[in-house]
Image 1 (spheres, rainbow, N blue to C red):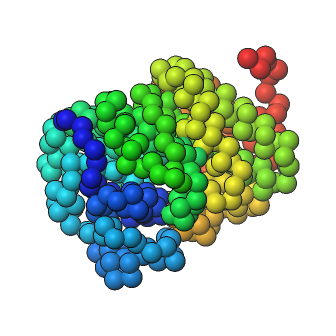
Image 2: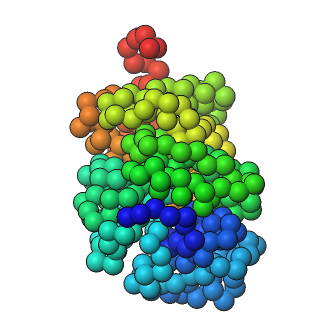
Image 3: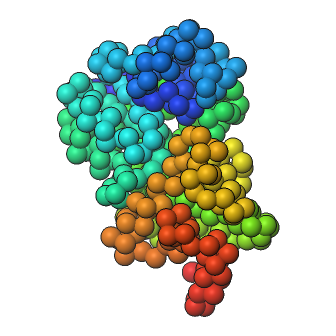
Length: 336
């Protein structure tokens, strides 16, 4: 496709993150059509001119509307921003496959890996939408509520085509929004996926009352795990030391706006997984990514002990205190 200035865009997923990004784009003057699978949710949004379920009190600007008609949304623009949970990513792309062509560009803001296969999302896209050669990912230290309120934010966009990255950056860029360009899709994806699992670990530690020392140790050694896997898979270390890597990691591990951190806090305080997820009431990507990251790390031959114990706490009922003991009592080794 020939990349031009983006004047309209279809956004898929009217949760908190998809809605926040749609708000930012519409405030910048783009025509935005937001898709959601639930007609009832769409009707409420269009009637109230806000997403009162996820972002109450944030009014929709002119140029932003919502639809549950996937065919109409796909025909609305040649630019498509996917913001559905990772477990629904392939399914949505499969539905879009007959509706999109070579002239279409696909960007995603989903953070995670494919459940079961451990595949990265760009691999899923290449399998489901081989006709769309222009694609990319946006990520970084961003909470939906703050983006929706127009608070200062920075993020990274990586794409297969430099012109597409530039066009997406210009679509988001504003006095409150700073966007950096990258060609490192793998690094941006890995940073956004793994930090969610590490945020669960940080929350567990704080839920157990272990304090700031333990939290910083998790963040630092967690970053080492991201860097090891990134090096094996071809990510650029500069990416993982930037907004999409360490920036997103620190944000998600240290602020209770993070659903992943809140899940960890609940587990550390003795609640079971089902209760904790029900209390949060929204998708917690790290709970699903813990399975996929373990599979990806195994295939890559990379040791990721923090991510591994999070998986065991979530799905093998490993007691959190025992998990911490196992991490601390591992054999001595050089830091680097």
